[in-house]
Image (spheres, rainbow, N blue to C red):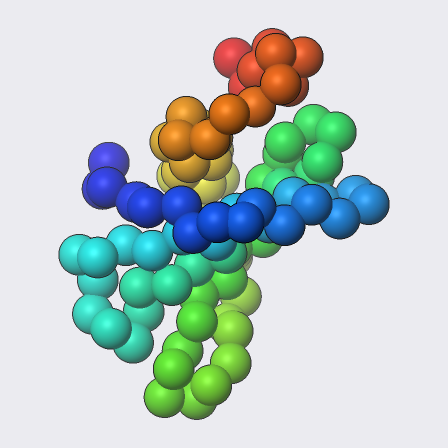
Length: 91
């Protein structure tokens, strides 16, 4: 798995958590990402990538395996402090 760096703050909405992160191994035009998670289950909702040349975010969820998304979620959640009741959901 690649090394990702969380960009703080983590956005917490009514139903969703948004984890923004960067992948420095990717080209500049595709290194900023946002992973949307359901707040209660931490299930992946979508993954978007920022395209600076177009100045917009592109949904790439359907291009990736559900197993990759789950692995990515686990790597990112290990980098942040989650309340203990949420840690049980992840394992």
